[in-house]
Length: 252
Ligand code: ADP
Image (cartoon, rainbow, N blue to C red; front, top):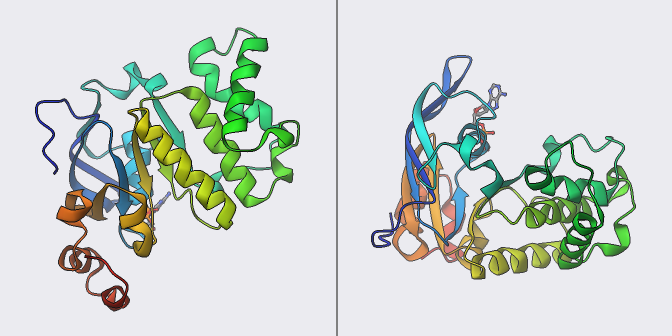
């Protein structure tokens, strides 16, 4: 892991084990994420990348282990943690507008009971501006393209103004414009001092997009800065020697 002086990790995962039907999807995972990094979580299909995020956020039960955010359990710091789920895992038939979806990012702050007012709507519109989606504010979310849906979810995360962001495959099946928009948002978040963890499966772009990487295959193979960790040897160890194509494409 990259050494970052004495600062407390933003996310500290210790000995995390998760099983579905008694088959382990994560085994003894240890991961410390320092503040302010833009980290890719990388590993083959079925490596447990989504499971890692869901278990950290208490969306699925853990068999063992502990997860601390900013040194405390998730329940106490929910508002400081934002999650952009995999697009495919969301029910897009839900009859709600883009603006409503984005405004939901503010519920941690205003509570579910209080009515969302003009100020909240302005914040939501500002986030939609950041992802270049203002003209879709009143559109039903089911009537957006995949890339537009992804940007609506990013806007919801932005409006939450969290300190730690989890994003599960935000680049999956989006067009080039959306991909660039997402990258610029990731960099903007980092420049605001946020910590961002992104599940990512395209090895070719890891070194361009992220400053740090966690290589995962049920357990953590290695985690740290790109130059320390994103080496052919460690990538091959993560993928079990199934990534011969990488040799010609520039992992260092
Ligand atoms: P990744 O995101 O790296 O592709 P996942 O975290 O989605 O991996 O899945 C890890 C493993 O757990 C896979 O073998 C997958 O089949 C299994 N798995 C994921 N979700 C479930 C579930 N709800 N029930 C049973 N097995 C699951």
